[in-house]
Structure formats: structure tokens, C-alpha cells
Image 1 (spheres, rainbow, N blue to C red):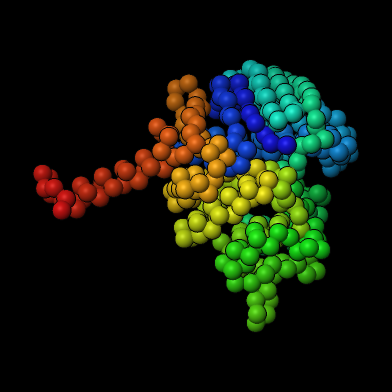
Image 2 (image 1 turned 90 degrees about the vertical axis):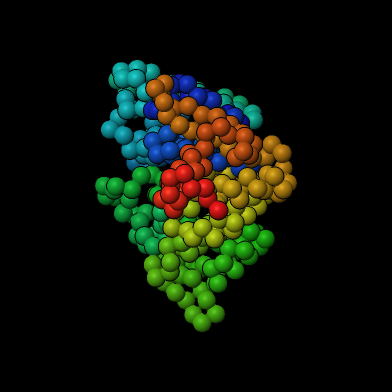
Length: 347
């Protein structure tokens, strides 16, 4: 069941905002501090709370599977604020959130004094599993991470823990979707394996310990293993924060191919990025029909005196405010000024 809309009132940097999501690929761009990661984390936290309620699954530490408890626990674990009072844009104040699927809705109100109320209606059993991938890879820190996070204070937020839990599942008997795995394994030059709680890249000449692999390769390897063990499936919601981090720009096309293939398989993808190559590759897929009309949406977030604002388009060219292109245009203008004397036209 697809996510269709997120409505915010006085939540962090957003005074009033509505995101109408596409069923396939949703790309968030904007300057630092515009709220991109907040959107990904909020969608993840609320979707996981709803999924756990439907499954009758509580949180660690004996948190009962009651909606208010789950929403509170997920928000605190994912964002790591001092208290829920940190979320309203105006303090003391009240924040209102509405997250909608095709046949379900979750409404949350955050008020002064750490107050929280939540209401979930509709076909909640149809809500899929969300998967949050942070900017850095976790395969190199996977050994012992889950136990350490459960029993020790940690600077890592809950998304790292949940991701490591997902990575800990054994591969499917089928080995995962071949059409999605093959391009990644070709780029890696090998296959991802886990042995005795540690990850390796298996090359024809032998296995390489994951911490010795390039960080960009570890990031792709993480996606590959999540496909292999079924965590990244056709009914999943993938929330990917800065997929371009530690990846060479030449991998932008591969990343866009992976994202489009996931959308075609039935997953719904949300990503926040600062990368020109990646956003352009995805927009090109819309232009060429590789992503069908209405299958993708681009959101430009920015901050002004009213707080966080946004605009939506089905391709990059439809956005009036594009922080990535603005930065490139500024660089080009300064290069021209440096290369040519005043009054001299470029040849």
C-alpha cells in the first residue's frame, strides 16, 4: 500500500507543508537545514510505528504495542531529541502531523509538556515495512552492533539499529531478485556474503573483509544484501538519505537504475540528495519514459522567513528553486569572471 501524502503544521522547520507523494520515486532536494532528512526520518518513524501496531509488536525495553507508545518511542529513537517539546516549530506550541496511505491514515499531535496523541485508522495490516538507509554504510560496523546498541548508551540513532537488524536476516533461498542484484554485483566485481556475523565481498580469487573494501562499494553491498535477504522487497518503503555519499559520480547512473528498478518492482522510494548527477539521471528517466508519467516526484525544499517551504514537480525542469543548479550556475559565473578580463566575451 503506497504512501500518498504527508501534511505538517508547525513541525521543526515547517510551519505549514503538504507533500503529495508519487507511487514510485520521490526525490527531496534543497539547501542544508531545509528539512530533507527530517521528512525521511518522520516518514520512517511513523510508518514503522504503524507497522508494529498492526503486527502486535512492541519496542525493545518492554514498550507495549500501543500506538501512543510506539509513536513516542520511534520519534525519540530516530530523532534523538531531549524531549518531544523539541519538535514544534514554535515553543511552547503544538505540532500536527498527518501521514496518509491509500487506505489508511495516521494523525499525530505533539503538544507542550511532552504531550502526544495519535490516531490510526484504515487498512493498517496492508502497511509495508519501511527501511531507512543513512548517509554512511553500516556493514563495517555490523559485528556486535545490535547487542551493543541494546545494552549500552549509543550515539547512533535507531535507524542504524533497525538497519543492522534487517541486515542480520539470512538470505532467501531464491537468492533475491536477480534482475536487481546483477547490475550491483557487476559494479562490485563480486558477491556479498556473511560468515560468522561478518560481511565479506566474495571475489573469484577469494573473500575480502568488508572494512577493507572501498566505502562506496560497502554502500552498494549493503543494498545488495538487503535485496538478497528480502528486507528490501516489493512492498517496502525505502528511505535513503544522501545515497551519493562516498559514491563516485559515475555511479549515479547505477544508483538511478537501482531506484527505478525498485519502483517498477513495487517498492516506494524516498531520497534526500545534494547530487547533480543523481537528480539529473532520475529526471532523465522521466523524460525518456524509463519512469512513467506520475511515477516520480521532485520536491525542492528551502527556508525563508516563514520557515520551511516546498514546491513539487514531476521533473527537475519543473522546479523554480533548485539549490543544486543554483550552486552550479554560481560556480560557472565565477569561473567566467576569473578566466576572462572585464568586458571580454567568452570564446
